[in-house]
Length: 197
Image (cartoon, rainbow, N blue to C red):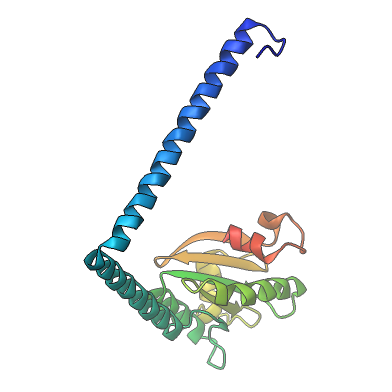
């Protein structure tokens, strides 16, 4: 087929068409092999039973993990040190980081309106992301004795409110300070925050 671009373009186009055709055939063969494998599996009762047993075992393990996460406080957005002496916040933080491989900690002040925006988004994310525990720490009444929330604020370098600290395997791996990573505006979506986290 002559497209009027000259002979060299014809050669390039023909080569590209051959490559696309070969790739498509290879993909079709891979799909057909997978279909054949499933057809053979349906004919073999022992293999099918083994597959069912493996899948049941996987589902049981997943349910046990989910129950373990729920027992550790996953699935909810809770406040560390709520109802306790403010010096217990640090202890609660370290206990939470021991129990959970992944921890998202929102450092907030009730008097800062922007913190409420993070509260709303994190409350939505907590039940959707069971593998991560979501908590908040009120820094409004940090004691000056170096304990509780003030210790965490100093140790983790919390300067801007709101700040989210992402803890993985007991190490702070990332800080989200304010809304800069989220486009610098307060009307970001929950999925945008989920992507950053």
